[in-house]
Figure 1: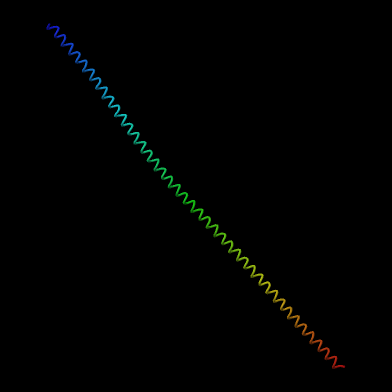
Figure 2 (figure 1 turned 90 degrees about the horizontal axis):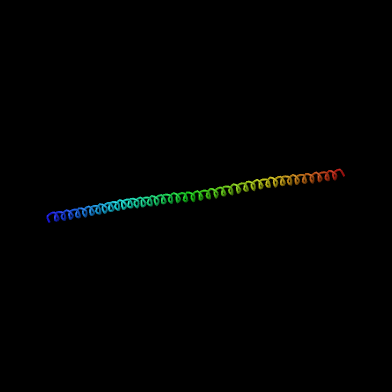
Length: 149
């Protein structure tokens, strides 16, 4: 009886031990799984953070690029305006020069006309003087002729 009891007890003990071992294994496995899950979560979180940071950086870069583009556009517009202004200035200068040239030409023409007119007047005066002189001479001749008659 005692032997049987002892054997039974041993069997019970063994069974208990086995159960404990099983349970420990299970527990270990669970812990490992949990740890692995945690690691995965951490990795995922880190990845998410990285992605977020990347997105932020990209956004910042985009903003910088946009600003640069805007600046470029503004500069381009300003340059266009400047060019247009310069062209306008050049045109006005050209117009002024043309006007001045025309004015000078007109003045020259006027002067020439005046000179011509003066010459004509002088010629006329000379002619008149000549005519007068001729008349005088004719009269003189006539008078002389009458006297000699």
